[in-house]
Image 1 (cartoon, rainbow, N blue to C red):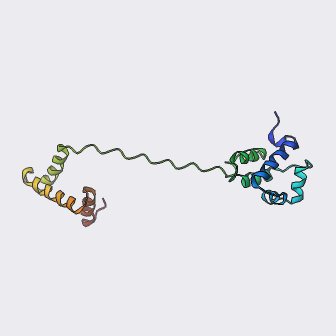
Image 2 (image 1 turned 120 degrees about the horizontal axis):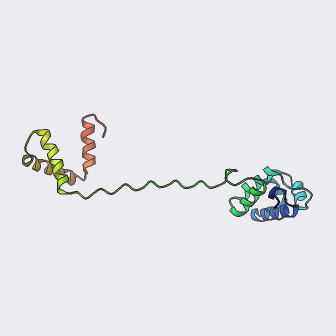
Image 3 (image 1 turned 90 degrees about the horizontal axis):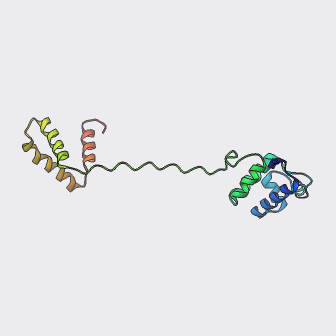
Length: 161
């Protein structure tokens, strides 16, 4: 099987005709797209010569926004791929996975929060529970969550949280 870059001129003329149609171009406009003169395009279309690799690449780039499949064939004819020519669309960045859902808040979790406050104050849990409950209730009334309150405490103490 012959390499596309070495196929007969008719194949080149067919590809050039498709590129001209896709671009809705005159010979002169096709030449501008390929970086050659109108006369050179006429020679290509008459089978007197054929584009060289970088001219095929230029045509692939010109056609790419209008006809992806044709752009791939033109690039291949010039011995390249759309990716090698920098034309391949960049893959969309992968979405970061959603964070794992928090486990449901259980009474033991609330107890551990109250115990942490009681230990710091060196007071019994039963004495600290109403204080912690009142503090959280006020934060909720103000529209703040535990993380926002913790950040505010950390900022006040000069720590990052």
